[in-house]
Image 1 (cartoon, rainbow, N blue to C red):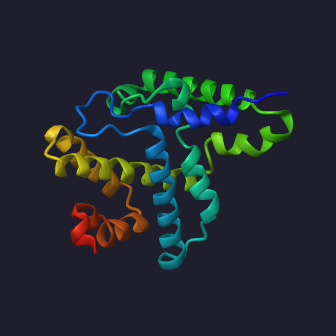
Image 2: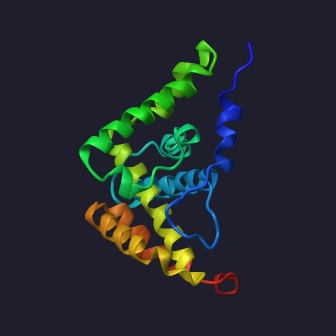
Length: 191
C-alpha cells in the first residue's frame, strides 16, 4: 500500500502565511513550524532548567513541528478572521479537525496511533507552551518585517507582544528578556 502522509507533510513549503499582509519576504508554513518547534524546545528547556517545570522537551519540539499540519489542507487562516467571533472559531476548529483526520487517513493502520497524538490537541500545559512558541515565531516575523522597512506588521507586533505578556509564563518572559533582542541584530553584530 502506498501512503501520501509524508508527501503531504512536505507540502508545507508551498503554503504561504500572513495572507492579509504585504510581506517583504514571504514566510512558508514549513519555516513557521520549524521555528515553532525550536522555540517550543527552548521554552520547555528554560522551564525545566529555571522554572522548576518537568516538560517532556522532545515531545514539545515534535508537537511544534506538527501543530499547524492541518494548514496543508486548509491554508493559513488569518488570526483576525479565525477569532472574529465564536461561531467562526468553532467552525474553523471543526475544519482543522477534519483536515487532521484526512491526514491521518493517509497513514497505514499501524502508524496512525503514533501520529494521531501529534495532530490532536495536546494536554493543556503543553498546548499553552506550543501556543507561546507559535506567538513567539509570529513576533519574530513581525520584527523581521519591521527591520526590512515594512510597517505593515507594526500593529500585529504590538498585539502579539501584549498577548505574550498576558500569558504570564515565566519561560516566555525569560526568552523575551534574554534572547529576543538578538533578533534585532545584523549578522555582523551577532558575531
